[in-house]
Length: 137
Ligand code: ZN
Image 1: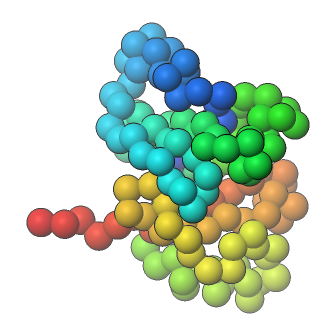
Image 2 (image 1 turned 30 degrees about the vertical axis):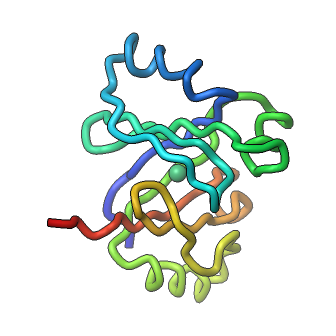
């Protein structure tokens, strides 16, 4: 069902304040930046091997990321698994009685489609499934 660990999401107050550590100290390549209005976040993707670190900062004070930061401060926010058919995976999870935050995909970074699984179903880890955009050529 899941084909790879796609990324880990890290909540930060400001992308530009967090970036120097990941990019310059750890040497990860910044491959993408985007504001994802549907999730209320500014996002930056840094490449590490086949996966990514996704830095997330809030657009506004009432977004999910802003509430997370207010509750527990900056830190690991979610783990994301890559899938090939997000609707099929959501159907399988729902059929297994897994509590979902999103029962249908919503827009993610870089044209992907994503859905979140409730941490109560995953041992306390907010988990995301992500179907990447089709490669364009
Ligand atoms: Zn993510």
